[in-house]
Amino acid sequence: KQEVTQIPAALSVPEGENLVLNCSFTDSAIYNLQWFRQDPGKGLTSLLLIQSSQREQTSGRLNASLDKSSGRSTLYIAASQPGDSATYLCAVTYGGATNKLIFGTGTLLAVQP
Amino acid sequence: DTGVSQDPRHKITKRGQNVTFRCDPISEHNRLYWYRQTLGQGPEFLTYFQNEAQLEKSRLLSDRFSAERPKGSFSTLEIQRTEQGDSAMYLCASSVTKSGFTGELFFGEGSRLTVL
Image (tube, rainbow over all chains, first blue to last red; front, side, top):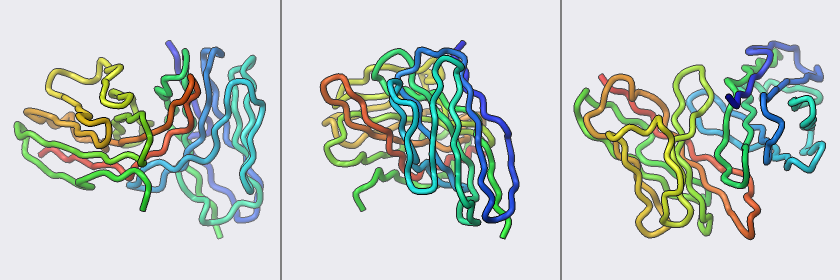
């Protein structure tokens, strides 16, 4: 079964700290991987998309890496801010370009001022 | 606003009633997806369209659920004879597919359904 796991389920850090969120997937034959942010009661905001041929993507204070062989991705957030507080979701697409995403359950991040 | 829009944002209904949600994707996005998300879980795939063709349906989509995208633009998701277990956030997303390449998904704000 193709599954996506995110660890930790929740994380609380002081403002300014650098942090890493982890995502693992059971099948390495992914097409792409996306990281999303979700605020309470809201939809999902796309943060970064990594194609299977890529190793990492960067956007501002965010850097996402992909290691297909180990079935892992990490989302690095530099110099965290209270506005970064949200749930971060990892999602993978398998078996071609359908973009049918399989999501993890997310990491709830709280950045304390 | 040129993002994905969903309507209504919130719907409260009684068990057994029918409900319909509408999604307007980003203009010129040829793919449209429906996902369902329950509290504390990640979204789960329901179905997707390429233009007006419904290409895949999840086994989560029982025969009480029907989705359409009649002109390849907006889409509707109808739930007949709602049950309490249908209470969830229904999320719509769209993307562009060209020459075998599929871009990132853009999600709407969701339609939250509460079945009493």
